[in-house]
Length: 423
Image (cartoon, rainbow, N blue to C red; front, side, top):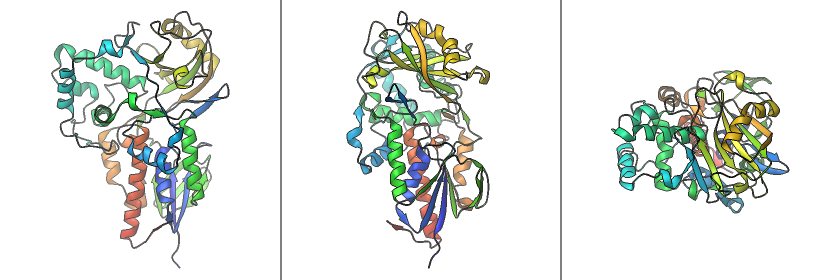
């Protein structure tokens, strides 16, 4: 009788869950998932605010999320999705405190098309943001690449708007965020649907992650929570709970060699309804970064638009530029950012921060060379790699990279005459 193959997956974020789901369909394996926290989902994190679920991490599900939507369909929870409510987005591109809506910022159509054609001619058929053309942009940052396009008097505007939106979504500033990784998201949103055609889970994205984990368990996968990865040597993996042997290992955690942005997401309660430019139906605001501030609010989300019961509440994403500025509790953080809240929402009177999540590793700032070298190691010594640092950072990249790693593992095992069968 053939010995069952033991496969370990490090990390139960969406990359690890996607890989685990794929492998859990097979017979003849012993599947184990190690997760350093006490729950699944990674940066797709949901908290209860006054008894109602609110997303603190990734929640926007774009129509071009191929793998994500595939698993939503397989788990039969498409009916739980809701369209992102149509609402006005506001931007403070100049950093003056003057917010402008999308219409007042829109450029002439021919100018947008020219920029698109200059940027994406070789990517018009690209449909997988987890497999970017790593060196297509000469390893340039977004800022450096925009400077090559000959935008002349529009150059600063483009740089500022890219930077404001990028950091508002907790990505890196444009002088650090590499064009090779940013291009996938831009390309997909232009061709296949942006936030206006996206969906979300009103019950929280983490609920979907838990359903995925439940399915993996029902297929025989075993989760080990509060289990931290320490080191690996060949087929031997060391954790805080001991040493384990495996026939293959998928590393779907956040690599130490990849730099990450540091943000805090916090729910703020106000005394009155929160208006932006006298508009109570606003959706989100994006603010220019203040490099002199160690705690800078770079975006805010109107929770009432997403969760109708959340009157007088917003979520803010706060960039941490100094580790010492990462406040330890809600009261200290509120005191530190209160003046910013009063300036951004005059007359609403901020009362307190109800909940905060400290994302010390928010979004990856990957390097093309590192990703290139890591992916060339895919399969060596039975080691495989997945995560949203491999491409355009997103829930979809995490999901797709997990599937790629699982597919490669299965192909390698079949070549070694280990025959897997679908359950």
